[in-house]
Amino acid sequence: MEFRSGLPDTVRVFLRQAILVAMLFVPSCASILSQDGNALPKASAERPSWTTGDRWLYAWTAGTAKGTKTSEVVGVRDVGGIKYNVLRVDTVQLYYTSDLHWAANIVDSRVVARATPPQPWFNWPLEPGKRWHYQGVYEDRERKDPMRDTYRVVGVESVEVPAGTFRAFKIVRETDSAVMDQYWYAADVHWYVKWVGRRGTDEFQEVLQEYKPGAGDKR
Image (cartoon, rainbow, N blue to C red; front, side, top):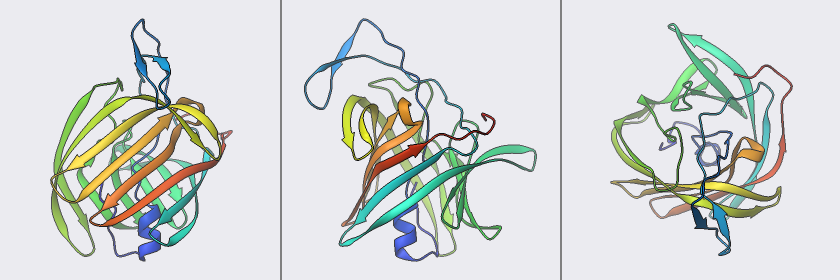
């Protein structure tokens, strides 16, 4: 997902995320190596449920700029008979399908960016070595571009961030342009704990500082 829009650059940077999920680890007899070289059991992750009120605080850097952002699940919206999970990041609402495929960014009830069809940051169940492809169209107020993405689950790694040390799936997104994403998702926090990306020569990073589960109904 190329999070380009008519928004200011600083807002645009920390909205690059697609996303966004809990993970359920299912061990098997096979094993892989973690980031620190230790053996970890092979795992898979089924499609997760979000809970209204789930909240994540991230620290982000982009070049010399830095800051924090809070992402919060605000519920489910019905649009044309299709239900979307809605995540609020500052003044922007991000819409995801039930499979947590990114569909659109909305500000003041207006679509500022969208992917057609929705972009599959995940393909359930997640498993080390799994690969999938996406072909669609990205559109915002400034442009309309074709997208051709390839995703692969590299494995399960031990990732240390300010919020703690987590076992997480590492997923790599590659495109036919100067765009790249690597993101790590952990079951313990129901979302990603780290995200590193590049847009042309511009690089950015997000790391989890704090997670607070919500008390609302699971979606």
